[in-house]
Amino acid sequence: MIVQPLVMAKSFDASMLRAWSAFSDEFIAVWDEKGSELMYFNDSFSKIFGYQNRDEFSDHFNFLCPRENILDENLSKLMRDNINRHGNWTEEVLLRKKSGEVFLGRLDIGKFSYDGQNFYLQRIIDIDTQRIFSNNLYKEVKKFEALFQFATLPILLVDKKGSIILANQQATELFEYSVVEFSNIKVEQLIPDRFRSSHEGHRNRYEQHPENRPMGKGLQLSARKKSGKEFPVEISLGHYKVDDEQFVIAFVIDITKRIENENKLLAQKDELEKVNAQIEKLNEELELKVEQRTQELSNALSKERELSDLKSRFVSMASHEFRTPLSTILSSVSLIAKYTQSEDQDKRDKHIMRIRSSVSNLTGILNEFLSLGKIEEGKIQQHVSEFNSKEQLQLIINEIQPILKNGQQIVYNHNGGAHVKMDLSLLRNIMINLISNAIKFSSEDGEIWVESEMNGSGNLIIQVKDKGLGIPEEDKKHLFERFFRGKNVTNIQGTGLGLHIVSKYVELMGGRIEVESELNQGTTFTIKFTL
Image 1 (cartoon, rainbow, N blue to C red):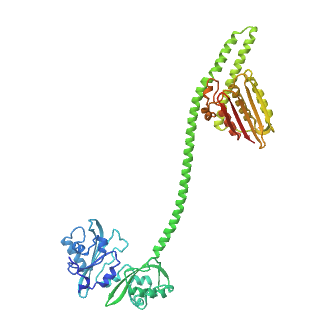
Image 2 (image 1 turned 135 degrees about the horizontal axis):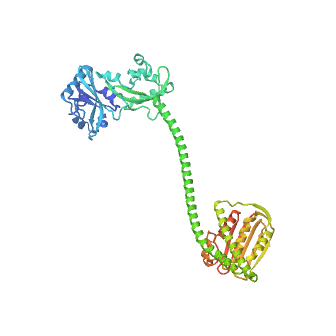
Image 3 (image 1 turned 60 degrees about the vertical axis):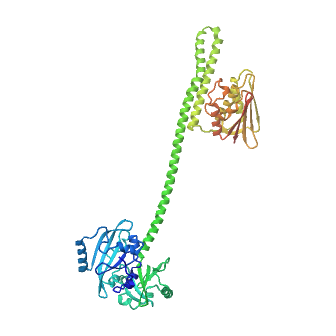
């Protein structure tokens, strides 16, 4: 089927219809009275049906079967009878695009007369995507005036002088002017006062270069009611000529509600952003708490593993360290029982001293474990008091004299002031441990040097130095770890806890401990306290 050019259709002038339908998203077509010749259709055929070529589309388009299934004879007759009686036929139908895709459309067919001849006006709306239009835009389409009057948008027809020729019912309701009042005013009367002076120039320029387009693209336009009330609008312009006279069709949309909704959406967006910010903050806090709890759990698991390791090493150490003194106590008790005569008193005294020494050794081991437990539980607290450091260090050295080996001696020297404020009990434990180690790892007839000094900065520096076994280089980095014992002292009694406890006490008192040692040349421990 070939569509005749509109200028050659003598029985139907489509210029007004073309201008009206140029901006419509609906498919609009005009058929002859028999429904066999397609007189006119607008460009929406491409958007709705997917055809790019007008001839190809017209070959596949039929007045009586625009849907998925061909209409049967009864339905065709029913359609024509209904149009003849009521002026139109409306139904929802399934339509097929060129691609084969099926979509739901609304079909309106109306009958109208023009210049003594009858025509069919056919409208198809893709109601899958264009539900913003009225479901029954034209219930009675008999002539061109009906199309204009029953449009869902306010429409104004303006001549080149700006006079309003026609205004539909929607326009009268929107601007509050009657049809008669519209015919006596110019379009500038519908524009706010502040814009009127420039509008005439815009109108004249449009007349020189007319085109179908939105008016004031990118600008916010305002209109004025008869009462003087202003409101925001969108305006689309179309144009056509009749006998070389230019006319402009203006489609007006009141966008007051849209702007109100947009403002509400912006307010809701701002509120949503605030809520999102609060949620993000809560998420960050939650993540931080989860991280903290995870770290706490990790620390707890680590401490549990350390405790398990501590128990294992304690059992191993206890089985070794407790065996010797207990064996000594048991053998001495057995031998004392044999010395029943008074002349055996020296022998009894000798074994009693061995028992006391072993008991003292066991007590020392247990005290070290008790101290370690208190340190791990954070129960060690400082009790600061003021005392003479020189006198107290000398008392500690005097108390430790009984454990010196044959020929060993302790040389003590002090420089500077002596009065300090610190925890005396912790200091005693530190010094007893370091001096005891110096005695234990030094040979008989060896000397141990203890030096203390109060320097000009008010710091107390204490050194314990011996010429004993020394520490292997590879063992130095593990020296203050729990249960660690150097490779060269495994045959010498000890728990491996002493230096660990010393380092914790020094740390608790705000000091630091350093060690210098050379294998078989001796060891020097230096402690610095900031007072």
